[in-house]
Image (cartoon, rainbow, N blue to C red):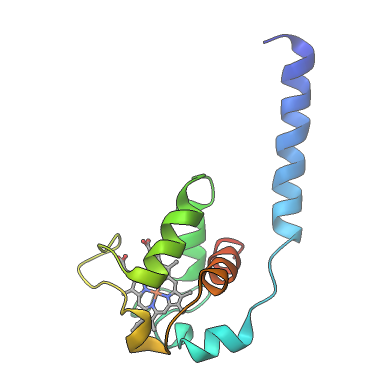
Length: 111
Ligand code: HEC
């Protein structure tokens, strides 16, 4: 890698860091209410479930995490944090569309 491309890489990742903090997604309130996300999660304190900040921390830099988490929110999957897994949409607030799952995961990962 030459000096120029290394420089632009650094500038670019600094920009990503700064904009990541500024671009927290707005909470999709209606969806979050309907699916009772905050019954088990909080933004910043682990309670019945990992906090959304812990989850964001763990997956932020994993490119395939968005897809994996959307899938998991809709169809379930094995637990990643302990023995207790998350209830399926039917036991939370009803079916969850792919679009809504996408919105929710984007919001969680922006915390
Ligand atoms: C009844 C309690 C409960 C509710 C309601 C709930 N969760 Fe969870 N959630 C959990 C538990 C427990 C875990 C940890 C499961 C695991 O180890 O994968 C979890 C994990 C997660 C994860 C990380 C999954 C992983 O694989 O690491 C995400 C993202 C998440 N929840 C988002 C949500 C969203 C968004 C909602 C609302 C649509 C929601 N949760 C509602 C209990 C809940």
